[in-house]
Structures are given as C-alpha cells and as structure tokens.
Image 1 (cartoon, helix red, strand yellow):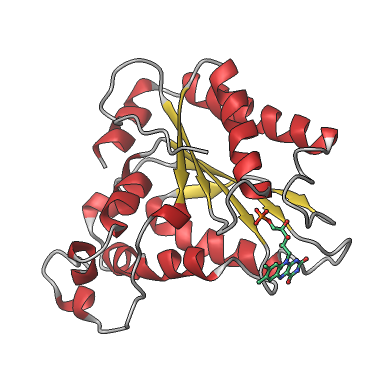
Image 2: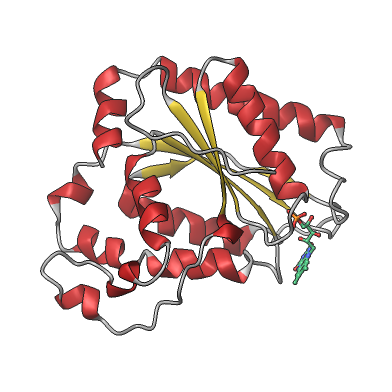
Length: 222
Ligand SMILES: Cc1cc2nc3c(=O)[nH]c(=O)nc-3n(C[C@H](O)[C@H](O)[C@H](O)COP(=O)(O)O)c2cc1C
C-alpha cells in the first residue's frame, strides 16, 4: 500500500488523514485505514494515508531542551522525519489512527512518536497561543487485538491517546475496538468491521463538510 500525499494547502474539499500505526505491512491496521478512507472519499472528502512505519522517528531522550528552547521546539526534529508528522497533527482538520495492541498498549514505534510530542505538551502547558488557539477537532481510532475478550485490552492505549491528543485540541471519538483479530486479513474478512470502518470514515467526512469553514481553515494554518 502506497502513502498517498496531498498538500493541506490544496484547495477543494477538506482532507481526511488516516495513520496506520502498525509495523506490519498489509495487516489489519492498514486495511482499517483503507476502509475508513474509502468511506471518507465516498462522502466527498480528499484523503491521505500515512504509514507511520515509513517515518524515521528518534526516541525522546528527556533532555528537557524543548522546555528551555524559546520556541519549545525539539532539536531532534532536524535529525529525523518527525517534523512532517508534527505538521500533520497541527494542520489536519481530522485524524484517524489505526493500531494493533502490543502487550496491552500501542506498538513501540507509535509510542516513540507519542513521546516525542512532549514538546507540544510543554508548549500547551506554558500557555503558547499557537497551541491554545488550535480549533477543536475530532480524532477517530480503531484498534485490533488477538485476544477474544478482556475489558482492559485497549484501556491503556486509549488513555494514552487521549492524553497525547489533548494539547492539539483533538477530541477522541468513540473508538472501534476489534477483538480476536490476529492474522493480517482478519479485519478485512469481517463484514461488520468493514461496514463500521466505512461508516466511521463517512461520518468523519460529513462532520467536516458541515463544520464552519473558519474551523477547518484555522486547522490548516497550524
Ligand atoms: C509484539 C506483539 C504483541 C502483541 N500483544 C498483544 C496483546 O497484548 N494482546 C492482544 O490481544 N494481541 C496482541 N498481539 C496481536 C496483535 O494485536 C494482532 O495480531 C493485531 O491484529 C495486529 O494488527 P496489525 O495487522 O495491524 O499489525 C500482539 C502482537 C505482536 C506482534
């Protein structure tokens, strides 16, 4: 599956971005993104697929340099590809994340990216207007795990995602949580899962199309 890139400045309908957070190519998270984007596209939005595993993202080393930097920037942004992902968080009018459960949490590469957003948490905490003025936006989530049941299976990941998205003013919508999915094709072969993801993508797009234009314009400026 190729990463489809469209610049946020491009005019036309708003862009719905889906981020596949699995290291496994062609697995359930990739399929979840495709289904979500198909739903969004059918409802009239432009779409972009981001495969997180294609991005080189270094670990946060807790150096606290972002805390003391005048612009609260992370110095590692110059050394890897995190900058493009940060812009995605600042500028996208809506985001969808699809991720597997790894040991009751998200895979390490995804968590590494989340940890690197500490500099935005700092900016938000220090009252940086650029963060506080970000428009409220919706974030969508689908997760898959192999276990057939377990009420705590997704709990840790959801808590982390809410916390990570808060400084960007993304509000996590009711997630789709898929149990008993292990093989890479299992989500795609499940009709209920396919329909739910398609419907979620459609809902995300329709919600954007009905939002006041000013909101999406502000998000596009970042
Ligand atoms: C390293 C690793 C850890 C995993 N940990 C869990 C787990 O704690 N609970 C669970 O239900 N499934 C676990 N799984 C199974 C995956 O969540 C499952 O195969 C998922 O469907 C993979 O999604 P993907 O195809 O998008 O990568 C784990 C798989 C791997 C490779």
